[in-house]
Length: 622
Image 1 (cartoon, rainbow, N blue to C red):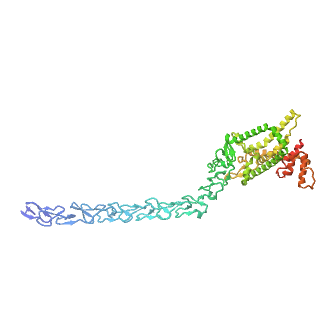
Image 2 (image 1 turned 45 degrees about the vertical axis):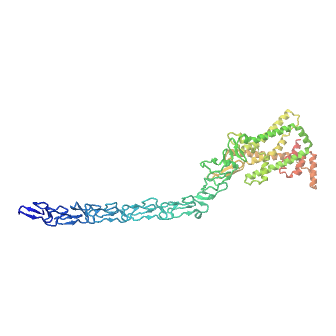
Image 3 (image 1 turned 90 degrees about the vertical axis):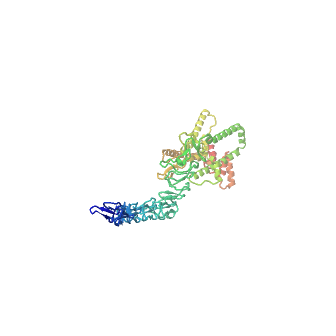
């Protein structure tokens, strides 16, 4: 073995290096296969090359493959494909270039280097990819990371992200920039993921604010704001907002409510205003009718939301049908218990008194005759007191209507107690309950007070005329003197009703024209036909009552002026004057006249009341 038979020479020859013979009588030597070598003569086999080595072409030795290649099946050197590398020749395959590294060449790479910061590779990469804006990476990164919220990067190949500066924010990941804080918000520190709203009482007018300004310091102590405001758009509780300015809330407005504007002012109970844009708040004439609150319907002039059920109109003064106005309770239902019980009791008591008086009339007449002088005296004193109280009640009413303060107690309570002396039946009789589809107003009251006396006078004259025609022999009844006497008991209230028919006042309607209403009855608009009809009727009644009645009395008394004012000595003292007037009155058998002149000088209506009338005109008709 290790030799072969050369047939030409006829001798056995030795196998050379790179060849071998492993059988006897071989006719030739075999060439060492790839991956094997033979560096000796007369060899019967070939030696396997070491791992990673490749046999030379003459198979006499084994050598290494070049870097960037690998030994394939120990037969050939192959270049490393893309993404692979071999710092030294590898066996069967090159090394993988892992994620975060790159080979820089497409084949036969001998190295795998790390990617720089701002780049990345996913593995088997020839080159590193650049991180886009909004992303970053450190060295040897397998991927780019998004910038966290509150940071950004606006350029490619970023190694780090930059924090948003104060006044800016970024709520998203992978941002290429930061947004300015919106108006009304702010950020104090960098890296903000969101801006904080300005707290109550402060504001930020511009974008990118790092602080919020305080309203009280910047604008004024009456200003404030809600959270996140761009301006001081609200007022403190004691103020309300109008056209961007804060104004002090007027009396009657709830000063505990925040965020008040002119349109949404909340009124306290017992107060009223005419429009959502009016700045003046008025105290209700009937406080129970005004429930307060805000005007809910600003599209019309019907602000019934301020009125309780059963009331409406300006100041909630007008009562709806089936309701009547009670001075203390406001508009209440026209039930028997509410409206008619008191009048029914008075009527029953009056009938009972009249019945008893009629049954005892003989005794009463006898008693009156026995004490006639005292009856007359007390009657005149009562008349004077009655007249005086009427004047005080009228003055008190007028004083209150023009805005004067109420009379303090206990005198105020006494005046209220004797209020019935004014004989204002409208205050006691629920006339509104007699109307089905409309309300009883001042015009209706004026008609009653002015026409009823004239109607009674006409009825009395007609009755006297008929009685005189039917019974001419009977003693005549002096209708005119009796009517004039009774008229002066009710003249104050009639005159007041007439005079109240003229006075109007204007009320603030905000953006609308001022509203002119009758002071005595604010349910009457002074620009309507109803008012002017009442106005001209009242002018006529002025001629009849406040002017006509005193003039008529003056005319009737003028004929008896000498008897009413007899001559007397000038040198009489007060006692002698009193005795002289007493004698004059007794001579005429007019005790009333005696009382009124000397003692009634303090009676406010001595010149127009019954003493003078009865002492003069009554005698003229006797």
